[in-house]
Image (tube, rainbow, N blue to C red; front, side, top):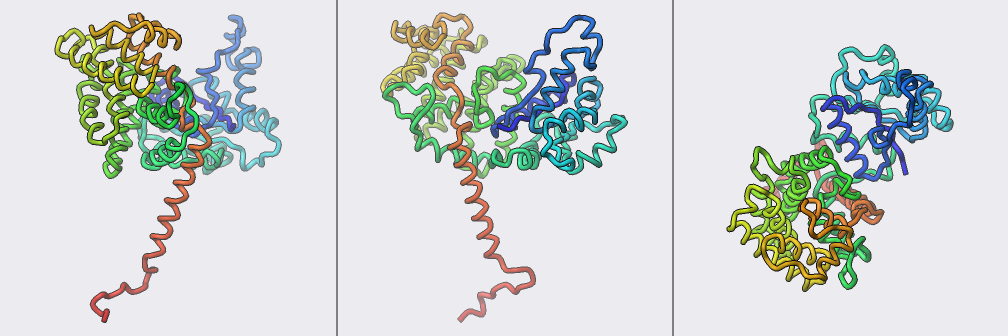
Length: 439
């Protein structure tokens, strides 16, 4: 697997969010990344730490060894990043041309895989900036300045980078192509991680899609932090603004994935005490799912709504809202039990007990405990998402080779259709047919 070293700093908000966005998108297409935030620094004495970015500090070898072992290097560049001494080290020509070059002797000097993602203009660039920009970075600068921390153009800009670094990972990035690719593979699924015995894998994959966070996060979800979730929510929102011509079922899922993201983070869900997920998104989706005539979608939305009522302290004590939660969760328990969806039926039963309905049965408690969750956990968010994550463990369908093949096939078919359509137009300078002369 292609591994990319990302040189960055988390000291500035723009840098941190840009790095998070880049990491999410690159991992979405299956690239392996090395970020120092994910690799703890080796132990060092106070004297070694005081030596800074020098060979006397174990962190020096840690960084240089990781950078030179990767297949490509992507620099997230800004005035803030170049204040960090280790970014300056990673950008040092001696590291690029000696350490990295020694580990990649077969790569030509003019093809060294170094790329620059410029997220803010550099007023005072490093002294060797000009020679590098006109040299090894020529044609490899991704200009993201002025685009914001979650730019709509980010996937498009990254296409050029992915095409050079890992062309086999290049995927169509528009939501309709992703949706069509998923459906093509989902319907024929013969396996699904976490699928209970007696349940069709395709049905479990469909529920995975409904309880998931969209194709942005094809890997395991428990490790996602608030910064990544925020990027996913904004990115889906960007997509929704250009998806008004997409089928209603695509727009439905964009809204559902947004709500699913919000439910994982109180910071994203609650704004000045107002519940965005329950106040604006999930209740209308109950009607939309009925119009789509998909029972699985209705059940997924109902379960999330029931949990949403119980987990919002502002409305959880209201009797009318609690009665609504009981009705929703009772229907979920019965329907999921009929379908044999044991983990989801058990979750609905445990949530129902919290809503003041029937206490969960010993069988439901055993199922939840068997997923390493405590049915009596006072942290309802941890319990709810812990069961969902255990029921649908990664990797998601979007991370499989079958999905990537289907996505590339869809991309090729769209390109052929566009080419055929273009061929039907009259060449430049050729007269248009005049229907009045026929006959």
